[in-house]
Image 1: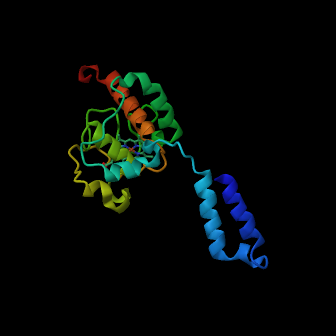
Image 2: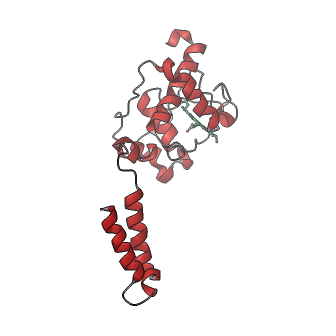
Image 3: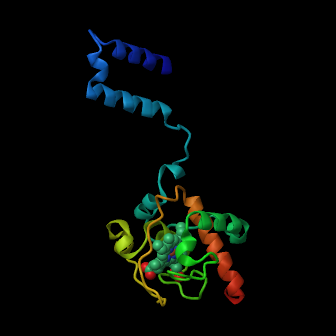
Length: 183
Ligand code: HEC
């Protein structure tokens, strides 16, 4: 298949009478498409075909569930993601808050279930949520923090659902350390 396509390339490149063919915009687009198809990873799992933002936008409320029953096992990995994506600049390195809401106090603004936390992180909230997606999914503030503002969406900056589940695992584990009675 590859050889065949290459032959077609050479034909296209040779053209039926000159160099013009190769440079016509339509051909360039076609060639780009063929190259993209050939180089696209063929064995990427369906899971990675969607960004977390698309996942949150297309899944019905309540459908998203962490694969990590034992969240402490991936908490350290989650904290690395937390620090490397600058969550700490708003929420503080330990999650205790700063410019934005604390993640480790007892207030959960929209709820503390997996599905809600995934959507807060992937879709963002308020005026920063693309197309007002978060509010349109029916979320309203239930808890109130001292500082109130929107959270930016991370569902395209973070490329996989797994990173979000690890972040949530770290947040839960930090919560547990501060409020052992809640665990
Ligand atoms: C620019 C500042 C900012 C950054 C960066 C940021 N957040 Fe937030 N985050 C907020 C704000 C503000 C809220 C409160 C949103 C609201 O009330 O609608 C929030 C809310 C949250 C909540 C819900 C907390 C609760 O008590 O219910 C979670 C969980 C969260 N953020 C996780 C993260 C993670 C994980 C990252 C990094 C990937 C991150 N945030 C990066 C500003 C930020």
